[in-house]
Image 1 (cartoon, rainbow, N blue to C red):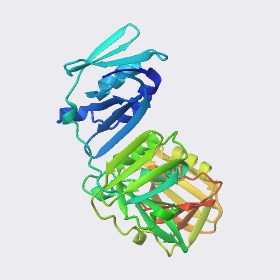
Image 2 (image 1 turned 180 degrees about the vertical axis):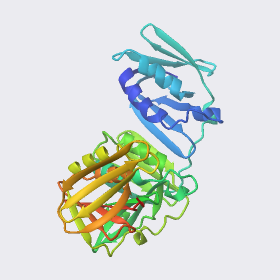
Image 3 (image 1 turned 90 degrees about the vertical axis):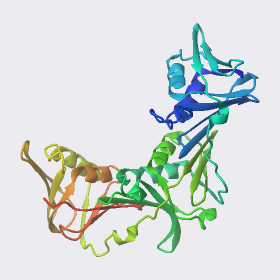
Image 4 (image 1 turned 90 degrees about the horizontal axis):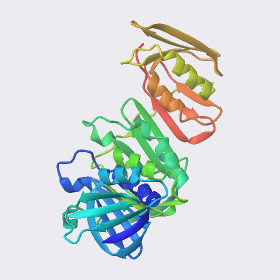
Length: 371
């Protein structure tokens, strides 16, 4: 194998594929990136056995071939090379090392056999549909903060994606919850997605695909089965196993009888929460909200730090005292981009619904704290 490639193009692709590779691996081949060069294209692939990224990039291939190289070391080398340089990559005849050259720099990296590199056998992915990249970004951004990190409830460590019905309209709905808060986002259901199974996409896959689609083209092609999902766009293919578990009946968590409605400026609300919570106890992050007609008072107390209060004007005529985790409340209010934020409450012990007045596609539920 012998090729020459633009450093910028190689670095961009290595940025994508090396992020999947764990820093510590008990299986040496999983620390490597698979490289295949042929027909003017260099293909890069990495995996952790649950998630696999393939990316193709144009290269001047003088001798086709394949090998593997340490992903993080290779990435660090290319990252530190001069910005506008070309990189020459050559596999030694005995297949044990690759030589990486650029300008006056030369590196030799040990290789492992291509035959040892594992492949996620995709099998049949019968459900196929496309969604705009902007919609997929919104779907992830509006829900990912509510994913759980508790290993014991592994079925909550991701986003539940499924076809549903909302007000007589078929929608593609994403839900995430950690038991303390819930985030729900929905968009029009693509025609070819009507028969898709309900799936739980793992946390790591969600975070990786979100990075990859930051500057993605218009459409993301999605293929899935009950066990795997694949995202394909530009010159990138990400394939992942899905979480094998049953997502809870989230509909039971969304209250229907809340009768106290308060509307507030979300930016002013977020800023006030941020200021007052500076004083709150680091463990509980408890913040008390007192509503009295058109006045809202936010307060926090800490035995070590002291206390803080702030008042602000709201639209509403309710009277209630309720406590929340300030961080959870901030996570939700930071998602609201419109001019108005609506909170629908019942009492100090019941979950609260928070929505963007100008965006009906998102809904958030937050459990209260005792304060």
